[in-house]
Image (cartoon, rainbow, N blue to C red; front, side, top):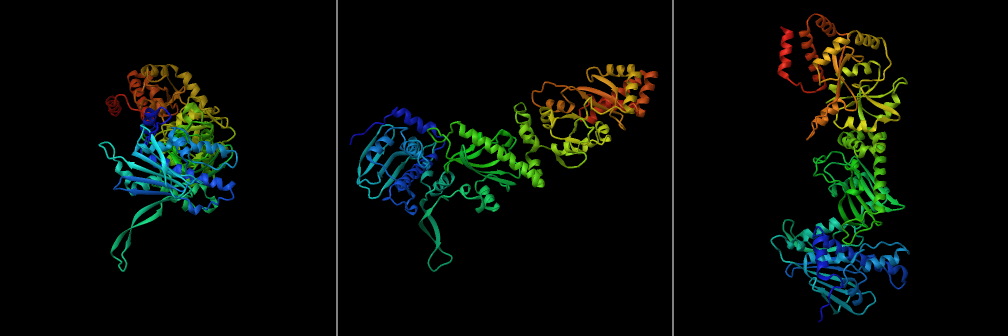
Amino acid sequence: MEKKQFQAESTRLLEMMIHSIYTQKEIFLRELISNASDAIDKIYYKSLTDPQLVFDKDNYFIKITIDKDARELTITDTGIGMTAEELETNLGVIAKSGSLAFKKEIEAQDGYNIIGQFGVGFYSAFMVADVVTVISKALGAEQGYKWQSSGADGYTIEPYDKETVGTTIILKIKENTEEERYDEFLEEYRLRAIIKKYSDFIRYPIKMDVTTHKPKEGSDKEFEEVREEQVINSMVPIWRKNKSELTDEDYEQFYASKHYGFDKPLSHIHVSADGAVVYQAILYIPESIPFDYYTKEYEKGLELYANGVLIMNKCADLLPDYFSFVKGMVDSESLSLNISREMLQHDRQLKLIAKNIASKIKGQLQSMQKNEREKYEKFYQAFGRQLKYGVYSDFGTHKETLQDLLMFYSSKEKKLVTLAEYVERMPEDQKYIYYATGESNERIEKLPQTELVADKGYEILYFTEDIDEFAIKMMRTYKEKEFRSVSSADLGIEADDSDKSADAENAENQELFAYMKSLLEGKVTSVKASKRLKSHPVCLSSEGDVTIEMEKVLNAMPNSQGVKAKKVLEINVNHNVFQSLKTAFAEDKEKVNLYTALLYNQALLIEGLPIEDPVEFTNDICKIMV
């Protein structure tokens, strides 16, 4: 029998597809099952227009058979089959797709979906098989045919007596090598796992003879192995069921069965979109944070199905980074796939789905925040940091999307509050949204800088994460209210008698403050009488865009550039310490030197900044004691 050559770039093209296009060898079974489903779809379509053809779904299936001794894996379908000409056209010409042509033919009529879009999927069989045999009999034909190939050297086609309509593909599985173990594709448990992973939602039953253990007749303790035919796939995916049919428990079971996490999801979103792009999705808001979430190893993304067939385990393009904690899946019939069906073309449909999904996630989080506050706070404790990163990243591009999802601890409410809730409570005379930064709520409450703002009865938001202030600096305002740190040089609070006193003291003690500044050259930009301190003797404030807290964060990073905030040393002129300073300045400059060093180091400690010379600091304390 004459061997025919593939009508393409022959050896090189086939080898490229086998070794390069597919990243995992197990994909071959997905491709062959999808093609089998495609063939049954074609009969279904013909039954819609041919009254002589009755489509009884019970008669249509895909069968997987293993013969370990012969090293053969067989995939049989009851689909439309192929004539000799179709075998030649569809399998003899690489990248020629009967399914694609068929799809275009019917697309304008009723839109029934055909899974297989590319003939090259069939050639993935050569990744695991030395010889591929296709035996097929077309619907309405009297004669069947056998197509056979051992790879890029060509193929043969000959008549074959086949009684039933459909196609049987026989793979002669390769022998094991040092690098690859091909025996796994003859193992029942492995094939079942591959089918469940990729083809669980194919709409026709995928049958396989499996080994089970049943009690021997007349015995409760002795068992015997029995081979029986089972349907491996579930066929009807949860996302194609009506939401009214499903319970929370159904969604939780799906979450667990897909191994999205070991926790229970806090919330789920079930989307059935039928507009510019058609897709279904089930999305989950997890309860707890994955152990590797903030590491390079964490891989975001949703499972992506094309008409029920798993295409990608993690499609990162479907989720923005700020919602990377979301788990779930998307199934669409509108996506354009490349020739391997393993990678997506980055087309308009994908972008539309991603945009819609982001909107659905935001809507669900806002609903939780409003109606299930305790549940939202639990979510926020786990993933609020990611939302803040989203506000800060990409030069604040997403701040409008995320700002209403943010929450911070409130000095008044003693709990997490939203920015909207804060602004709603602001007195008419309050100009700014005030915040304070520190390692913990307890530390912030003790900060001297909070005294004036708190004394005015204004609410203060507590920032305890390193990203907080960076995110807020990127936002700048919320509902036209500017954010202002309690450590800012200008607090925007109307002057009172204490302010006038501070101004007078600044003028009167200009020489003292100038002298103290000279002692702290390079450490502070100025020394002045404080308008914010009430009971504490000293504090540091900052001028400019870089705050003291930002300085700490930036300098803790690798390859830090030694960024410094412009610090101001503020002295409480109503404190006894100030009187001691004034007396010392008039009588004993050495004491002024000592007091200045002590006050500066105290201010550093209050801010959580390191003291430059701890030994000198302790010696200064000893001098005071003596």
